[in-house]
Amino acid sequence: MTSLHMASLHILETLPTQNAAYDECVSSAESTHAEPVPNPAESSNSSAEHVLIRVWLPDRPGALGLVASRIGAMRGDIVGIDVLETGEGVAVDEFAVNIPDAEMIPILIREIEEVDGVSVEEVRSVGVFPDPRVDALNSAATICEATSIPDLWLRLATHTMSEFSADWSAVIDD
Image (cartoon, rainbow, N blue to C red; front, top):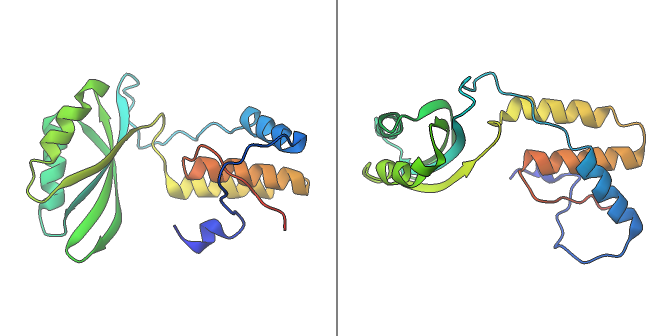
């Protein structure tokens, strides 16, 4: 996580509160939570399960292709690949994949891990595939439309929560 993402937001441990202003802010954030922008790279197959698959693989020619072939062999439709990290002979990549059925996930994981040196770190079902560039731009535009400081804080907390797929967020006024 970069310092840019954390510049105005401080993450706190969840604490019980009886604060009415806090409760109102949470309620307002939940009721105004923006719908995600559809990703044009998404397949039109609405019955497909949209999953993000994060894998660790050897950083060598052909490794990415072997993983992609395994996903394709399981009828997975790869609609995006993000290289999250590389170094010391290892790459961490995240595949955006449409699969016909969520029940295929355990089989798909086993198939991917058959590739020498590959490990599946995480598989997450998502409603819409994220597009960090578009999502960040949409969040910035919405935050810039704030008409007051409390509105700014609410928008900042709401969009930060969305951008990081977090269950909660908080903005602290020092």
